[in-house]
Amino acid sequence: MKLDDRTTRTERVRPAASTVDAAQLLALVRLRLDALRLSAGIVTLRLAAETCPAGAHQRHLFALHTRRDPDAATQAFARLRAEFHEQVVVRARVCDAHLPAAQFAWEALDHMPAQSAARVVTARPLVRRIYATPVPISGGAGSGSAGLSGPRSGPYILSGGWWGGGVQRDYYFASAGTGALQWVYYDHRKKRVFLQGCVE
Image (cartoon, rainbow, N blue to C red):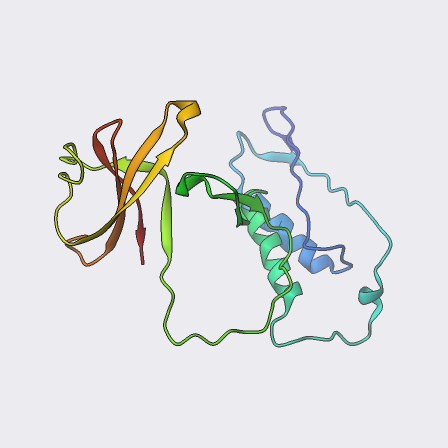
């Protein structure tokens, strides 16, 4: 793009997979243009497409669809990346780490992974949401769990990391006044209570 203030800008969009569907490509371009914040109006717009040989599935006369179409999900991922940014679609990957907040990492997800058979559950599972940065709880300073009030489960003691100064924490599941279940810990080194996340 050549802008009215004589600057240029280059943007890249990519579909979920190589495609001959021009409408799908134009939709991605429109999403990206709508999301841009430009310093001036566009004077010239040039489009360039990278080509590749057509795959065998693109030559089929009739598309075969299952009840859950993985291609549709992958195309939805491409639309999200076009409207926001390349790293917006991620999934959690389990890591071997000592602290609970470091036991997973986010990695980019380009396509829908193969799905196993649906599993029937009798009760909705609980979801533990972990905050990237623990939140200090006001009035949470004290000895042991003295800064915690209300019903709680624990402590679940975690200690180690002596090579980096040491970590000694007492984790609790505490009931908040709103009925939510908070995941908190008391840090013995900092002598303070932190909110690590919540359980829904």
